[in-house]
Length: 367
Image 1 (cartoon, rainbow, N blue to C red):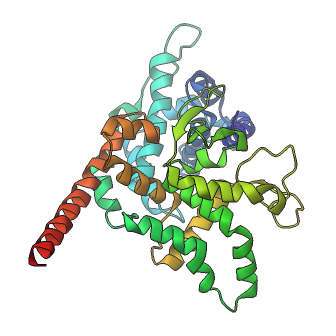
Image 2: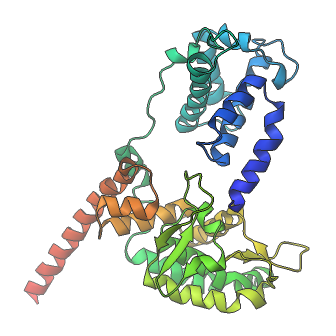
Image 3: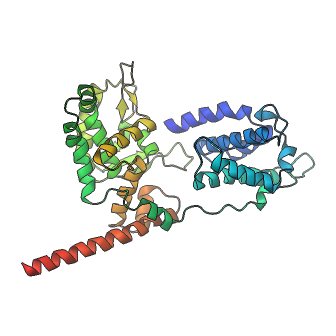
């Protein structure tokens, strides 16, 4: 099982006993089909909802586990509307529309199971009345809308090589005089450049990157083998191609990985970091990789860049040279509909490229 799934499974096993029996039953029903990561999200959503019910006096329970099935059955639409309002306005960090829709969808899945699938000893549904069946959950992002939000926030064409050059050289030039920051940069710049290069030349998700082991890289075939998101088969790693441009950066990093990060023989992780107070390197975390990318992006003048936007940058560039189905396979999307955002993004990119070509042609004619 990959590292992230192991951690999510541990969190799932820790949280599940605190849930009411009917939620435990639902999670076990979903276990064969969904990854531990997805199930943990369900549990977190149910924690939020049950705590809200208790705080609003809609349940007399003293703990989450004591919230009764019958208390779900008598919920009114007014209560669900109030919960939606709570999610959007009353939390310290307000949820966006996408997160609210996901939390409501989690509830709808639970209520559907209890009212349509699960049965009591007399073969009647566990839940006689399903208030969530009345709730309309609008799709929050269409491919075109997502593309519009990403416009101007990705690396395009020469910016990809410019950002890599910045990480490798120019970031260090800006640190002159800051000995502590310069030391950390010199220590990690080859690793950091390799990570950023690999994302920009493969389109991997950060979770897929974190789980990579040294043995998962085949430099000759330009392949890496990854656990794909959404696939619950821990016995199979999907082969994913990376561009030739990433090979030099990989070789540079692999040449110093063991000595610089003092990797113990048992540590198989490709990307390592030495934590404070530790003598040996260990697998980098998602948070560490995300923070590293943001650090360089801010100094580069693109503070909105993130690991996921680097993936989008690769995908947009890749789609310009391939069709939607190849792009879907490369990115590991379950549906081509998700990949359509790159069709909308590249519409503008292609138009700009044509304009540039026309201008260059006119210049040549004048010459």
